[in-house]
Amino acid sequence: MFMTNVTETQTTTQTSFNSLRREVKPLVNLAVPLVAGSLSFTLFGVINSYFLGLIGEVPLAAASLTMSVSIIIYGALFGFIGPIGYFIGTAYGANDSKKISGVIKHGVVLGVLAGTIGFVLMALALFVLPYLGQPKEVLEIITPFWLLTGISMIPFFMTFVFKQFYDSTDKPWTGTTLSLISVAVYIPLCGWFVNLFGLTGAGLAAVLAGFVGVIAIAAHFYLMPAHVPYRVASPWRKAAFAEQLREGLPMGVQYLLEGGAITVAGLLIGLLGATALAANQIVFSVLGILWIVPIGMSAAVGILVSQAVGAGEKQRARSIGVAGMMIAGLWSLLFTALLILFGKWVASRFVSEPDVIAVATLLFIVWGLAQIFDGIQSVGVGVLRGIFDNRYPTRVSLIAYWLISLPLGYLFGFIFKWGAAGVWAGYGAGLAIASVLLVRRLWKMTGSTVPLHEISQGEKL
Image 1 (cartoon, helix red, strand yellow):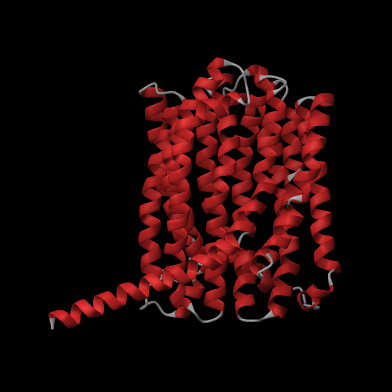
Image 2 (cartoon, rainbow, N blue to C red):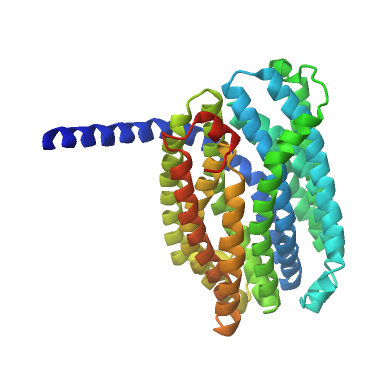
């Protein structure tokens, strides 16, 4: 009897290992182009940080403050239209091209709506800035750049809708190539416009590059003969909007809570002065590049899970998630070591002010350690989105970021007087809690006893 149990355990372990190994290759094949595609957003921050750093600390601080506030709007609206990719993935797994056509048709409208809402919210937020205790010299120059950042959201979200089509239909490199067109246009424009117009020039360049990018990706989708099956006539349906909104609203709220916590933390750092803000901008610009691997892996996991559910292969969901966490975890460990060892050198590539470099170096260490938990929680969220379990991550965000991260960040940063590093150390504690809760939920929702129809509808168990 004992030998039988041992044999069964060994067989189960071998089966689990084989399942994980089978998922690694398709995950990597999808995640690599998704990571490369994420550069179309993160490189904008790196590029303007580089060019603005050449003209001084104050413009760099203004860009940091703008990013700290805009990230909450980007996040909420990103979640709002995020389910489009998972609906496309599920339909693609079920070979339903007509469904994909309808999703895209309604999704483009939602993309334009999301970008417009983003601009309006940025414009309204501008009136609140004078009452947030931010540096006076920063507020004096920020308005044009702030508003242009809002306008650039319109082409960004339109591009995102089309890119989700390519990502979810096994053509990720095509979507990546098309989305990087805006970056290629932005690099020379930013350098030229910053020399001419300073901080405002960086905003102008972002708007122009964004519209060039969306025109390119939309033209490719509507003109390529291979996309004819996905451009079939489909009626406008309120139910289609309702379906996307049903899943998009909790995703949007989840991103709002997470991005809002980052925004509040950024505003707290603003209370520490322009030096802390400038250092924060450098760190976030660099981390934007490092984050794209967990973010890309999260998106890849979600797409593969949604395709598996559409194809009736729900049992693959757990293996896909675990494989994604292993890959993201290894990446995070590698770059944690690099940030700790070379953070000072990286900071000195952006600015020459010793105080800014010193603060940025410490922030690199704190965020490097937090990266490990961020990679785990990102993949966990990806699996749950792929099975349309979008409400649980929203509750986790409320608990982890607002009830844990921000109070601890204030305690460490201001009561214990650890400064900007203390604020982000508190955020790292929230990431650790989120990773534990999300892994637990993933295990529960992908168990073999969970019916397929409950997974695909995201029922609460």
